[in-house]
Image 1 (cartoon, chains in turn red, brown):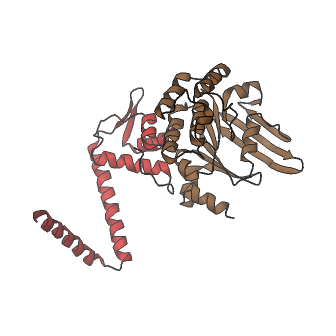
Image 2 (image 1 turned 45 degrees about the horizontal axis):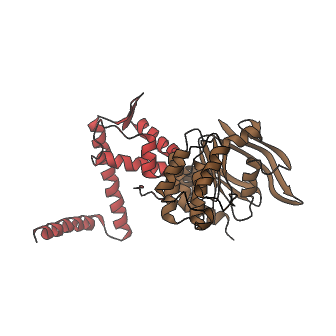
Image 3 (image 1 turned 180 degrees about the vertical axis):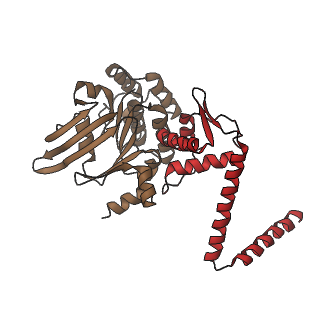
Length: 127
Length: 231
């Protein structure tokens, strides 16, 4: 199935985000071998050159490393993956707060909204 | 490596400049979209590259050589009009390509026909317009060429088959080959392109990497096209 890519942002950046997510969510485990550029490009329905660019960028950040002949692997440095996870989580929270601000909701109110929503979910769970 | 190089390439039909002073370099291993409004010179440029037209002035080289026997051998061309005898069966068209082109891989072609459920025993004239287009594209993409030139390859084909065709293009071209695609269906193909060339009234407007353009403009290539060529 082709990946869901927007046409108004660079494709290679979206590929990087997608693979980062797959690593954080555990779809790819530390030390796992990545499929080949060609396989990934076909899966995503993108140009192999674009996929190559995304993978080189992931390699540059250290999240992925390549072994000369046997392919590309996910880093075994779990601390790095945890770091990436908390960075992304922070980004999402910042985004959320910005959106709340656009709605005119101050931070403390946003916070209580969150706890209410969580409580609401709990209520539904036991329902 | 430079695959196509145009210097001050110009084509006139009488007094009409179909292409004026085109300077262009295309590298090997890329998929390039050739985009422009109707009558902007796309097909003229493709016909110059394939040697079907002669330039009025300027130079054009393929792999460093002028257009000729060698360049024609290495280019697989899908024209905007069919040239196959419509009384042929699909199978005959396959044989025709097999005879003509040393680099034609008939196994690959029959395999793709089967995947699209096209019966090789049917005559071309009994096939729908879209199916005829699919057959032609299969023929062209089943050659092991250096350069594929596709003039409006997906215009008459339904969206599901379009996806199949794009995947066919992606999975069949080898890393050193380039593909030059002219089309109006930008949103359908823009995710597979490396670069775009915009031409307008026979002039080169833009030649850039698609991701660079997206990053700069925060827009899709389709949107940029609509803005640049707004009527």
